[in-house]
Amino acid sequence: MARQKLPRFIHNAQADNVIERGKELYTTIKGQWREKYFKNNNPIVLELACGKGEYSVGLAKKFPEKNFIGIDIKGDRIARGSKRAIEAGLSNVAFLRTPITFLEEFFEENEVDEIWLIHPDPQPRDKEERKRLTNVSYLNLYKKVLKPDGDFFFKTDNSGLFEYSLGTFVEANYTILRHTTDLYSSEFLSEHFDIVTHYEKLFVEKGFKINYLAAKP
Image (tube, rainbow, N blue to C red):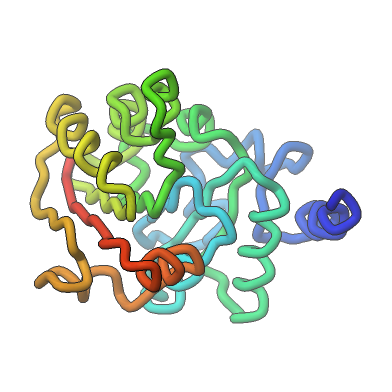
């Protein structure tokens, strides 16, 4: 496994679209994503816990007028997203390797226009609640970088996490604009833009329903 990961870590070190510890932008990019990386004034969209970057790349293809940043701590996953973006010739997507808890270290207040959270680890045990990316502490963190009129989109196959999240979004003073426990049979299906991650495909094939909500801070 380590031999498989090593080439990906080397890729990350050399790839311009990966920002990680040891690179200059890692410590200087805060508040300057448009100026220093994207070289435009387009809206900034984050995908939290982006994994292999399937959604970040998919959205970047569909919305060239927006800037996308996939965030994850796993370097081998980041490398896959980076390679996808490079192969697709995309200049409007970047990848940031860092824990989500460090979000304020890389984004100024109100710098972000839109956030996506796609199939995060549900952390189902009660003692893992603080690790859930939709717990109140995380939602409050996101609000610090998301514009007051920004959008937050959340998808999960885990009904328990979704039910929990409906409560935490309200507790954190988000306004839930719309939600469904069966995205594929709902009027909101077009809002996921036909972007299906590898794991979502597996979930659907196994008969799981996809839960979805859209909210504003």
